[in-house]
Image (tube, rainbow, N blue to C red; front, side, top):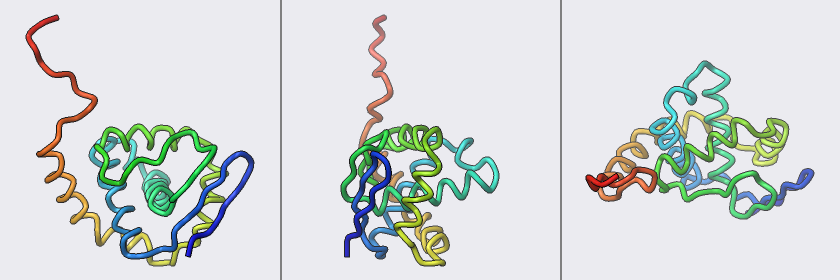
Length: 142
């Protein structure tokens, strides 16, 4: 069942928490950890922010007014890292209200953690087959 959310200029539609949604949350976390390992693990508040970030992105189906677009959970780690940067600099009040609206079960963080290894292995397999859109190709020319 989808749930509507609206506060200030931000509106969103959230999916219910399912196994697929939790897997996508693990995919978002794996990509942030790959691209922003330092900022994603700086103490407990950042770890909780990473959980919250991944839950919000994994639950969103439609949005307006967010300061970023919601990338595919299989997107390149740097793409999701850039969204993470915007999220961290964004309005914590809006994120907290979105998280409350999602109303994820208590054990959600543990369930995501259980899927993180699979998401990381999947990410590395995908990365081996695609080049980063953010890296320049070495051509030998200046």
